[in-house]
Image (cartoon, helix red, strand yellow):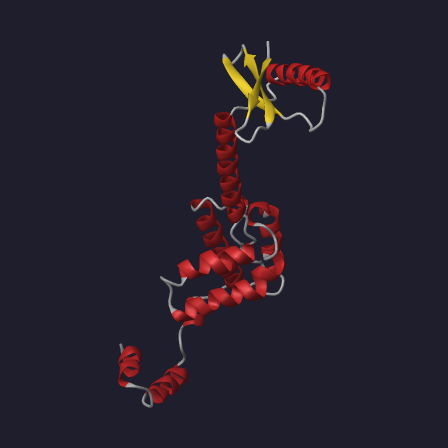
Length: 231
């Protein structure tokens, strides 16, 4: 049962130390009651009894915390806030991830022309469609629709380039835990349309007059390019 002891500060202020025992935790809890100035002894005694009883009820209900418990809760709240901040930092849109993570990493290992091609495809065909959507919310259906719409007006080879960029981007995001599921795992690589003309070996070769023109032009180029063409 809770009880109260009368205390006096150095300046003469009278207050009461109320202590209550928690059987479950096997420890005491303490609070302090300062009676209003001018109250009679009877009024103070009556209110003090109310304070003591209410404090014991609160302790029994687990509503009162010790300094150590409060500190532990505050520390846990701080850790939880840090975890939530870290998780929130992972929530990036495709545009943010492509510009801030994927391309800076990719540019370290690709040639300049390839870099320009990647940026062109991202800025013209991928970001306008998926750029404002969170990476974790992009579904296989969204990516598939982007590729199907793209194929309506572009060649098979161009569609494969867009597919490869998306595949690399989501693969990196999966590996660095930005996403927990890679949507590209359920997206098929673009298939060549029936009306796309297949490129034959003959189409890849130069005719005699074209070859003569190339050799004529290369004479005006630096030596290293002449050597490259001749080889």
